[in-house]
Amino acid sequence: MPAPITHLVVAELAFDNFLGYKNRREFYLGNCFPDIRYLGKIRREATHFSGITLGEIKAEDSFLAGVKFHSWVDGLRMRFVSNYSNFNYWKEILSASGFLSSNLLPTELRNIDRCLKLLEDAFFYQKKDNWEEVIGFLKSDLLEEELDFGLSREVIERWRNVLFNYFSQKPDKITRSKFLVALGFTQDQIDWAEDVIAFLKDRKELRKFINDFWRFWKEQLNL
Image (cartoon, rainbow, N blue to C red; front, side, top):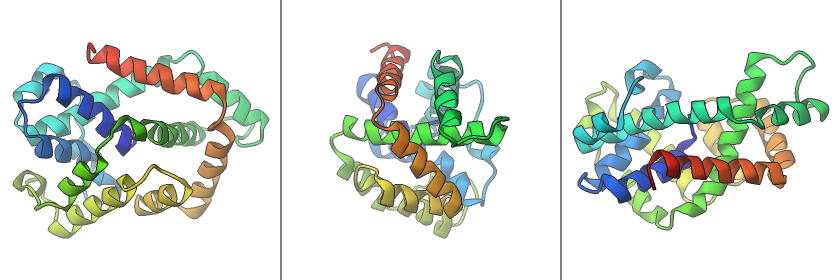
């Protein structure tokens, strides 16, 4: 499952090419909504769905189309990373450099994946020109569809504010740290992630991964 910037950039690709009959504001807000679960007030199963198809997304109203497109993208990213031929490379170089234990734990695999997601966001941020538009959407009135999930206005507004701050500039160490703190990660987890990001970000293998990932999305969307 990608981080928020990548989610929105892929959603915009879909919207601009074959979902333009939807309401852009509602579709984008729907796409941003599911990971509100990180605030701990709703179960993941309530905002994420399995087996979603593009046909089902096209038939939904704008907000729910965005919500379900989020789940569709989550599933495809998981498939991409699982099948990516060089994923073992990340494990090997991070183990050799002392970032991982000798007996790799499942939590460490998730931590590697989280770092890749944050790096994807840093590279994908420039794929969208008009972040002010999305920020404006986040500052607009709440939708009834958001409230239908049984969350309080305060929780929804807090989640929108988290995204507002994260989308306001290309991610760097400070904005990532604020974002991860809001999601409940500890300072030790954040410091480890930043060390890994600094270690990986200029490697040619990462650039290839990002380029392959971008090509993958365009293929999935038949662009």
